[in-house]
Image (tube, rainbow, N blue to C red; front, side):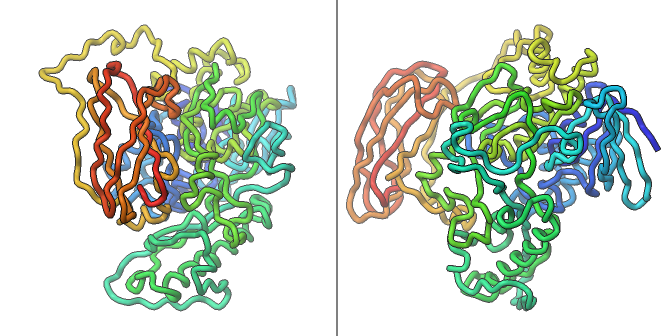
Length: 578
């Protein structure tokens, strides 16, 4: 069996799904090849990792475009909570329906791509891929003009001989502060999750003999587990000691042991209030974070994500912090699973990323002219991958790659040839398809919304009203992150729609028996993600926090300010003030 396509996308995670749908909607004939029975990758019901990205760590940030479309449909139909270990096959169905709705898109589920065939005329070009459809025992040859490797592991690119990297670069190579001094082969690991439910009466758990013993909390040092209903991302194993691709089977075997060992700890060691809980789901497909990264014309690095680089060919974006897990995962029991966890402010500061852009030059192979990448296998360093690997970010990458494939088809170009002449058209087309690109304006003259006038029957100034006071850390999910007080400066960015700030009320929690001084600073920001307040300091003020409990503290400001602008208020005090 043989088929011919404009675009073949291999890998049905969120990146691949978005790429395929984007290209099909614009008119390309597309094949989406997925080795699993469901779409969604790590977000699917097989693995159940919640989708993260810029929306988690940046005010007013949101992954738009196709992912937002899928999200809204999911929340309309799906009752499952969005959290680690939670999930249902309804999400799988939402993605399946999105693909099935596209008449230009053929979906091949349970179909691993086994071999890449290069062109006889030009051996640098991919001609086709040989796939095997599980169950039907059919060999399928899919011929394409363009290919997108969204496999995560870079399976297609690897078989073509395209240059890739795997492991950690040395600190000096890209001047990355978070990189090790010397390069090595270490990668972030894979995780298995679980879910439990309350059955209303005590249920014992008898552990198998072949699992490790985690009899005390010291055996799970640094690995908080207050929420015992589902978890945990830190049940993770990788390199060292296992190669994340070659040792996949061993990694799953060891992860299953660790999931059961953690559950045995919760049920049988210490008081975790889990007597009535019973396991109702254990993941058997490891959720992978890192393996091969395929090299493009540009390699994204640490400074690109921490300083929010704005590339002239930017087509996607991210904003999760630089989340690099500890080598060895749960086997490195004397180290935290991630250097800033739980709540280590100094480490968090080193890893914070603003909303950053992703260049198109990182989305195609520099060696194989008709091959693009989408997802965690794009052209980045190990450090930059700590943030670009998040599924929300991968979705924006996928939509960008699929849209680029349409333009390549329209103009009979290879991906590299879109830069720089067709990049503006690509960017504007992404915006038209509900995408977002940091600090890039819609310039479509046919968009009537640009000249539309907004009217309202009435209006009111924006007001921030006082709400009920309560400690933020009553819920077990919030206790997963240690409370960090105002000994580390905290800030809030907010918009202004009036011409004056008279005062600002802060909700302050004190664990001290005496009043404490708080230093407050007001700054003006250039835009909503200007966390440093680069427009300058407007006022510094010291106020007093009452002892013992939660209270409102008024900060006098008495300043005229600019309309429709953003301001930042920072607060700094001593240990025990939150």
